[in-house]
Amino acid sequence: MKKYKLKETKKNVTEFDAGLNLYAYKEENQNYLFFNNKIYPLRYTPMIFKKIDKVLYIKYSDGYCEKLVEDKFLPINNMKNIKYINFGKPYSVIFIYGDEYKKFFNLLDLETNKLLLKKDSLHWLYIEKDIIVTYDILGSFISRINTDTET
Image (cartoon, rainbow, N blue to C red; front, side, top):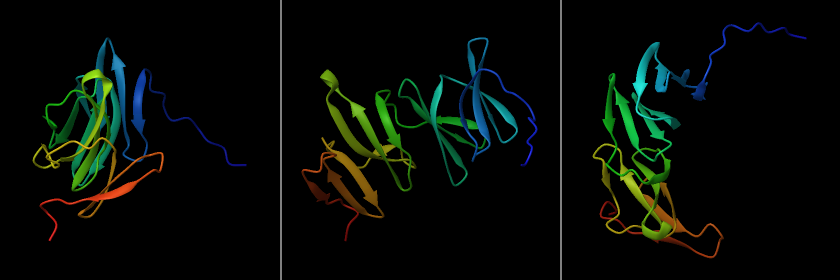
């Protein structure tokens, strides 16, 4: 049997991603991110990390999203009510709670910080290259959405 030795212990870790070799922790009511051998102060407690190319995307527990680019934090859209985001390239699928907790879905262009669909979808979205599909998670229907990017 192989023996393992504990290298070090981190305390107050709130989130981590072993594949990206990063973790977030809390110290004296301040959140921090350890990434690329640097420590960055964070606004809130992070929930999701995703690295695409050289950009690290972060979603916080309050729904705010931002990206870390060349040691600078930049906001992703100004929506604070994002409940779910599937960071992807070229677009990310977002799930938003509107008034009276109605669910809406849209696609966010991470380069321009703009929503792709002119009207929010009431159903889940799936994207593969330029093909966008909306579907009901209960399986009652699936349909394709036409966009201006299609030829």
